Amino acid sequence: MTRCSQIELGSATPKAMRDHLAQYYPLLLEHDVPVYLKDVCLKVVGDEGMIAFAAWELPHVGEAGPAHSINEMKMRNRVLKGRKAFVLKSLATSPAHKHGGASTLLLSWPFERADRLGAMCYVDGEVGGERVKLCEELGFVRMDECQIDLTLGGLEGMYTHVAMVREPKKTPAQGMTTGSSADQMSRGSTPS
Image (cartoon, rainbow, N blue to C red):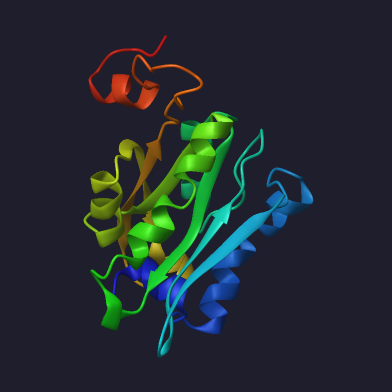
């Protein structure tokens, strides 16, 4: 289990989690952290119950909702730059069902919707983690990274978190694309 997953899945102590979340209180009071407009929670269910779960923040114009750390939130806002985006907030798959396609299904859920709306899909995760590898296979491009101090969550050390986006594809009714800004940035050119 990754150190970030320990926070997400509850291995960190309640006191450590309170201390970790306390960094957001001043931001909420100053209105620097937007209130979630709407989230969609999805699950994949098998014969024995839930196999996988995902939560996506639906697109809106403005800054992304709170992340697990201040550095992660700043990274999201640098990448999104106020553009409309589906933002993955949570993704978990039962270890017994890894590599069964549930995570791919949940990660690709917004693609068609994003293409119609002209919105990006944004995902972040731990460098070297399974989520990052799967997202790259699905066409997400690395855009930025930040360091996250895990001591705020009662754990030890730092780790690197990477931001990834999938730019909207043009639908046949919208015409052909000439290349996304993420594709251009990954090739080293400046988007127009």
